[in-house]
Length: 167
Image (cartoon, rainbow, N blue to C red; front, side, top):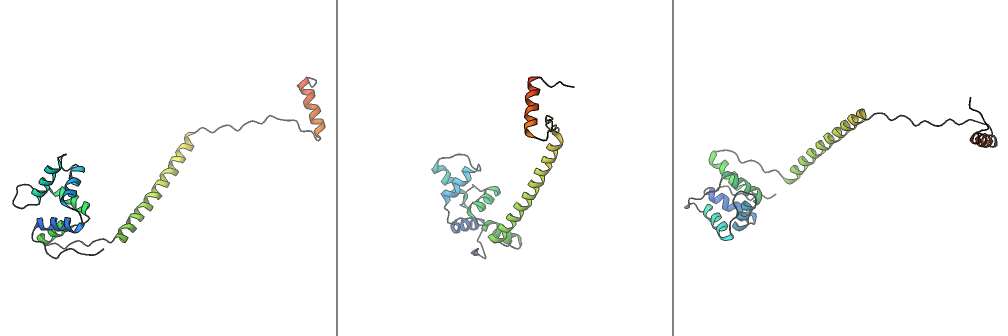
């Protein structure tokens, strides 16, 4: 990531303007972003862009809310207004997190969540196993054991015909 943030901003308006210009977005895209994400009501194109331009003009009585500026920073992928705020409050600007570090953090979080999900699944399986009644083993009909096949077949036929009495 290239650090192309200026060392100094004239004012908050300059910080917002720099954020939008250096992000490659324009005022219309930003205005529509605010409308589509519920910050502004549905307005016609002309009213929407004029409202955005009024918020960008320090001589008008129309201002962005703090939540709108934060949302625009996310949309533009830049934090010039945050850096301006740090400058005027005498605070150190936060360091930018390189994408690789951020991706590694997200990967660790996902792995941790996967372990938790696996533990929950195992717990659910144990609970379900305790709640299901054990199914009785299927009884096998007892068959007489006879040493030779012919004898067994003869016994079966005689049994079916009723020649062998039950004891």
